[in-house]
Image (cartoon, rainbow, N blue to C red; front, side):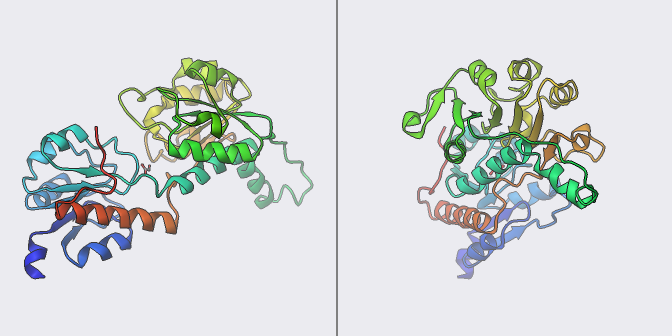
Amino acid sequence: MSDQRTERRVVIAGPVHPALTSRLQESCTLRVWDDAKHAIPHATLMEWLQDADAFVPHGGIQVDGSLLAKAPRLRVIAQSAVGYDNVDVKACKAKGVPFANTPGVLVNATADLTFALVLLVMRRLVEAVDHVRSGRFAHGEAMPYGHDLALKTLGIIGMGDIGSAVAKRALASDMHVMYHNRSRRMGDQQLGAVYGTLSEVLAQSDCIVVLTPLTEHTRGLFGAAQFAQMKRSAFFVNAARGQVVDTAALVAVLQEGVIAGAALDVTDPEPLPAEHPLLHMKNVIVTPHIGSATHETREAMALLTADNILRGLDGLPLLTEVFM
Ligand code: GLV
């Protein structure tokens, strides 16, 4: 056992669900950075990676050619997230290091959170809770109305597995669903979602939901010109990555009433500083990047990540390898 462990050094670059470390420590030697308040210093990471056989990064760490060059023994990289905009998968491939993410297991949790944001912002639920907590309800003050979801159009930008799961939830609320992807999704008709160009979806939707991965094509996809194509009564929900949106443009369109409101699980920067205007607008809701943050889903992500690491160390195909 001790021999096997010395051949299986795993670097975990941030706090993780305990299921990940429990499964790995049965057969691996772990180095874990578990300080949630401070990111692992670059020099420490580089030192740890020198003799690492496997690596579990997180979204704040850029995994690129220069990092890989400092990690000569790496045989596998696996990250507990579906997004991998921080990972240069081509560079991993060039080095012969397979990389895996955690698709699938987080679909329902992320779709629930995303659709909850649609409900929160359209029905003004955060304001409603505040209305009660602040005593205004008890004093007989009227709470302003929200909007029906039924018969409204939800526009999904980035219709993958999570988008489809959000579409099902919207259809169950009697919404119409439109979507835009770079290419049309197979089975969209059975699902009940109508494909459109980005402009068509923006113009016809009462609430836009962004679920696209962050890539060179989607960075800054939402700026003043895109918001201007939306209805003035429409809401904007982002559960993808903050950098898909030009934050200054979003602030301006909200201040000028170009759109009606926003709900954001992701922001740029993330977190937003306490004085940021988005945190002080009544018609904006910000949650702390919790799409997959449930006990069950985070445990499933941790176990999938551990299994990918163990398979990579054994030279087996990963369960959810990202292929370019
Ligand atoms: C969360 O943002 C993820 O990519 O899983």
